[in-house]
Image 1 (cartoon, rainbow over the protein chains, first blue to last red):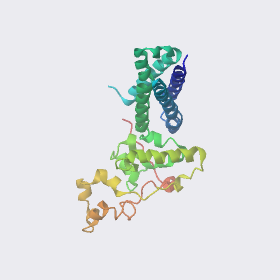
Image 2 (image 1 turned 180 degrees about the horizontal axis):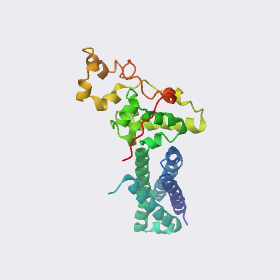
Image 3 (image 1 turned 180 degrees about the vertical axis):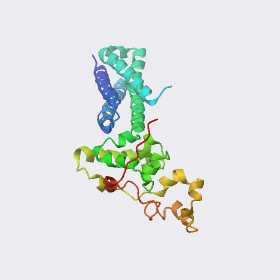
Image 4 (image 1 turned 90 degrees about the vertical axis):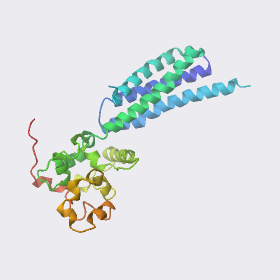
Length: 65
Length: 211
């Protein structure tokens, strides 16, 4: 497994965990659900997306001569 | 019809399935189709799920039930049922002048471009106080700033009942002053009984007849 694939795998894990938190937060209307979504779900999903985008840009720049 | 909740749940479930596939079969990204799949799973669907989830949570946060779910707001919720039409919040709630399922939000939001977001931002500090701070007594809860007439006039401006009310024609410039927010609807001995939770022990409550 290459470094790129390892980063993509970690990105996928973050996205899965973040979206699972997001899904769980939608199960209730309580303010704490809103906070869980905002403080836990969103940052973890965004971390996954950013890691994925970083892995793409890092791989592309390493391909360049 | 595709509601915000359905979109959030649908994109989230699909996102999890595809992200799981990418996590266990990362070698798929070596080919073009796999890279497209990864883009969908790790960018498009998560972004859509976050956007739809945020939108759904924002909608839910406008409900009366949401606002009254904190114990300290119970008395304010009770004040909506006072059987006395001089209580402004109760008169609005009981006569359907505001949607009952969004009673708090309808009056307490700012009718400006980012008013809804500002409200929710303030709401975060309320949650902080509820769980980590010192919870004030219901009668100690005050507005951050004096109530702006803009929120009242969002509905009442131009309404015949507002324009032609005898009390509103006491002076020639009364309506103009209220529209410029120079004279408050609530703190000028006009509509100054709002929630008044400290008086709730002595009032009778309205019981809505069963439909």
